[in-house]
Length: 253
Image 1 (tube, rainbow, N blue to C red):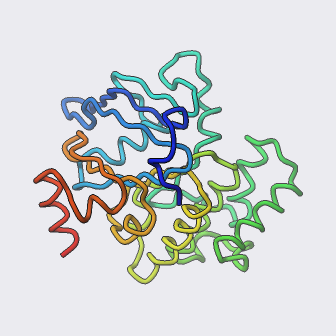
Image 2: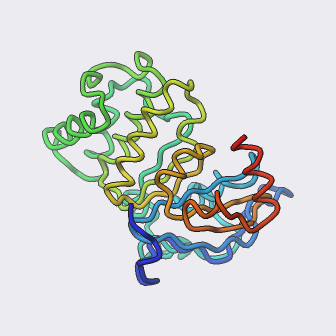
């Protein structure tokens, strides 16, 4: 895990500049600005319905913003000339509900995008898939279908599938919220390993244990706005805003 304070502004890999997003009359994101540095683990937390998942989906252009600017790895997402698929190939995303293809075995889930997007041969894609299944601790599950896996195993396959594309950034949208308590730790351990290896990560989660262990920076988002930003553990020990103090007192007790 890197100390984000040691990195210069030139190392920003994600830049959000006054972005807003509404769904009808519901304002999900309101004038949010934030930067994420290369190698940084940015942890976004806050109450349900506060705009966290929407913010994450905007970074990957799964949602189009109404106003503002998003730059990912030097490329403007809001430019009409931008190849969005090019950006998505560099950004891995892990969803709350896994999003595995149920009719494909684990290996096929991990190799499909490699062959289609990265244009890898079947042999190369399989080698990558087997290596990553070992990395996430389930090499023995290569030839089974998703419905034969536990929730924790499905999420680890989803992480392996995202990593197979060699992304520069990993986005995690509530990756443990659909899991039984005993399965949460196995997924968090994989995420902690990625953080230690220096992967740029933006994590939306309520798992404060992970935040304490891995977050370089924490962002408290509520009602579509950033309430407070703090470096790592400082948010826990010395929150500045009353709204943050109240929320932390509820989730930590």
